Length: 152
Image 1 (tube, one colour):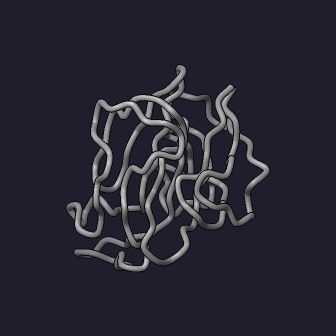
Image 2: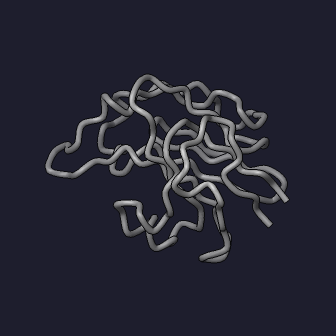
């Protein structure tokens, strides 16, 4: 069992409330999302493991047989990295709570080149069965490092 920690402060929402069908329908995997607090934020790793992918707007950490994707916003890939500072290195080992990316959700525009953007942060357990993540934190405000849920 692996505790998955909040990568940033904010209010926890159900994955079904994410404004993107790929996440809301758990096509990538189950999990929860966070409506992040406004202001400069250092996003941290939700688990210990190896950084298998890091991009300005998203990263994946693989640890103890579980991969967790943290996606900073919806359609934020369209910003081409603007507004994000990558702090982690792909291939490196991280502990839960290690700094990964710095951003300011308040600086993200609501649209870019005709596409709506959102600052909602999905935290996804990759390759897990749909509906397999339950969290008591939904509706609560969490700080970075607070437990969101445990994987099986």
